[in-house]
Length: 459
Ligand code: ATP
Image (tube, rainbow, N blue to C red):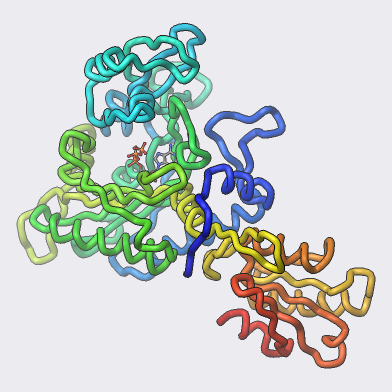
């Protein structure tokens, strides 16, 4: 994928294109919205599915050592007690003392150019006071308190402490909770991985930056179980694989991707090594995904809480051991925001500005748009429908019909959706059984025989 642009891209450019062209809308928009929630429109869901399928294909389908699971969003509350989430899954919060709006303390400090990663609440409070940091509305702030980000709910008709649980804040625990099941039913060779894609929920104090930080999002995670002696080599291998996926499969430019070795004081308490893979977003360089060495922290927590052994018995008769874990964890929305950032392009065509999304064909929601040159000529419409139906067979669900406005407007619309090709049926098509194929990136037009069209577009 070749990606370039001549202007400085803003978040508003992306948000407005996403809304205009049916990719992503504000959640509950018609009722005034709900902060931190986003709905996927017709083209957005197709892009999202293609991205999630590309991930599954690369990390699960093509690998004999990685197995998929699909655990529930709502799990026994003991999962979140044993994992430490009930006690520690919290962000530092301050309150505006005048209007009582709540903000993330470390984000406010960051906005003032002060790095506040890994500090205690007391240290954050002191930094806020010493630097006279005010709320974004200009009012004084409270001291810093911890705020647990899990959404609490109750299961069943009887309200009791046993009925309390949480919407999962990560997919990882659904994997760990099924580790024993997978080992017992498949007895895979070591090392092996379990993968899961699905929703995660976090009650972010101040959701912001479009889909980058939302309250409901989708994760794609792998827990890769290794012998403790192997973790360093496996970690390096996973870092390579993650780059291969981002650069070769998704097509993100390598120069926009940066590895950040997270210092010990900023790592989650269970992690002995973490690399945040950051991306050059319009909001600056921020975390796209992370790779963490989680040691045996999670399996040992489960073993201690349940009394059930998490040991793996080596097939060569070696000593049983509790595996250690390397975890590559992707957020779908942040990956899609990276794709939109990299592919958003503006250029000039016939003297006027054009916006296009240079999506790779494998990810583009629509592979081809089919149009009759004129919509009031039944013979052109009939021929165009015939071509449309034929292409639907070749690219099921990824062919778009467009007979609105004039051809120029249809091209511009298709460019913004990132459609690689537009096919137009004109009067010559009726005699010659060929069509015009227009290329999104070059705007070049080529005549192609209908019989060769699917092959041409699939190249
Ligand atoms: P951050 O520091 O940005 O809050 P995190 O380190 O808490 O992120 P993890 O718990 O490691 O994130 O989650 C793994 C991945 O899930 C992240 O790399 C990111 O892609 C995604 N993710 C986490 N929180 C959100 C969110 N609120 N909205 C969208 N994606 C998220």
